[in-house]
Length: 267
Length: 267
Image (cartoon, rainbow over all chains, first blue to last red; front, top):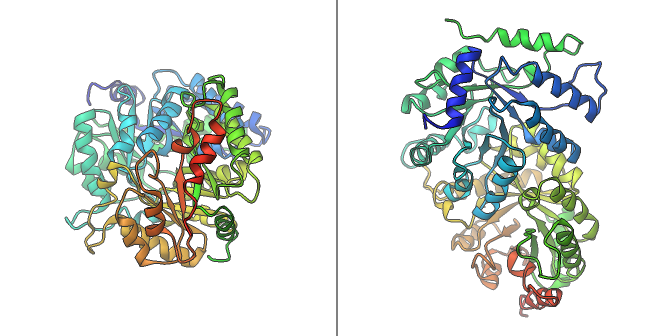
């Protein structure tokens, strides 16, 4: 785990940026600055500028593939381009929430890792180990399993109590930790609006958390690091809309950089 | 539920075909007949011929989007074409296993329903109701929630026991039935290699099951219908590889039709 190239890169980038920010890329035509045309070309130009002007101040990027898919095949072509703008030292996590029977997951892994060149992916745990293993078997890549998410629906299944007195998300986390010991390339999605972050961290000091729900969704950044960082001070706090669309005006790059500077680790 | 256009169409098609076969479309370059070039053009031509020669003998089609994604953007362009070959009276279920926070699921629903023109989709339940609702809100469309799958990993989470003595998949099913009562457009994926099919059916006589695991995965077709069909005799038995790749020779269309004819309901 600690020698994995993805882990090492996150460690280096965190030391360099002095923050834990993973910039979420959720392209939305209605939110880009006014001076860009409200079409795929405008969006492409906007994203290219944002990425090229943040590579020194974020530790990773997380394109949300569904927002690209929402634009159809032109959107997926845009996602193909993104890898070219992100330097190899900046991990690209495709938020895809995949997981299916083995031969299908194999295709999904090929799409996310080989076709788009992602360094990491997010996965639905419901179907169990053989649905996740084709991703784990990409030894140089990293997989983040959904444990606890930050939406109200987390109460429906993730938080139900099992016969062994754990909640489902605790059990998923525990199973995931045993897989991490075997495969060495597994992290967890843990929602930041949840007090449970601290409790999961207490059970293990090594694993990497990808923490959504900070920013537009209301979680607190510094509290999330305090509760969710591992023993090396590492975690990925994902912020998308609140940083990406910091301004509708021509000062948007400055606005995004200024906002990110508010999140520098206080030492 | 019983008046929903998807349900009505499945009912009509079952009466017409006298079978319950949903033809799974899992494009695989290594499996198409030898006389097709082993490239995207060959695959396109193969799929077009298969679809156009089966519209009178299957009740629905289920493209597995991951197999198209595995071919990259050319694969997704092929998926775009498929809707043109499938008559409007033949429902197209895109097996996508999606589900995310609300604004992301909204994009996913747009992609599957609006962009590709699917009539139905498969969904991961893990993140709960608000992750599924954007799909349910497409009133004319249908959503199949994963309950119990046919892979070994189903034992990891789907079959664990809850504090209330149900298994997780039973609980997902029960929650899903309550949502079905509200939204009217929800079915369930229930693996055919599982004896549990019968038990889930016993709890409700109305809901539609989409049953994978028959054919290449080893489940029995007639037994699955007996155990899984609802009070109208309806269910969707998905078969992909065993029908699609029935022959590697030029007789492939005849072979597929002949195989399908073995599954006519015995009356």
